[in-house]
Amino acid sequence: MKLGQIVFSKAGRDSGRYYAVVEVIDENRVRIADGDLRRIKRAKLKNVRHLGTNGDMLAKIAKKLEEGAQVFDRELFSALRYYNDSIENIDKEGFNV
Image 1: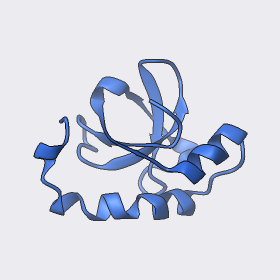
Image 2: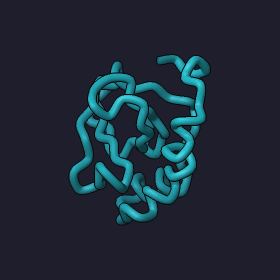
Image 3: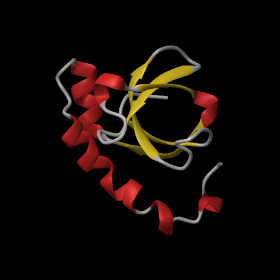
Image 4: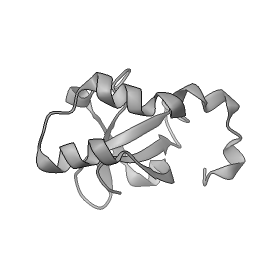
């Protein structure tokens, strides 16, 4: 997993919701946030086995995270809005759930 990568939760109460990777702890754990229910300051620690990805990246967010610049929750929320608004419309068979 890489900084700024868009992931979705495969397990837990947040199953099916989209997030961005905001911190890589090690090869098995990352911190994820969506800027709405899960803010950047309280990013959720998640096992990578419980996450799926569609291969998309948030390039601007990734660059800011790598540089150590501040990323605002509103900025992250706006970037993920398309994904989280379309959860009901997506056929999950297309993803590796």
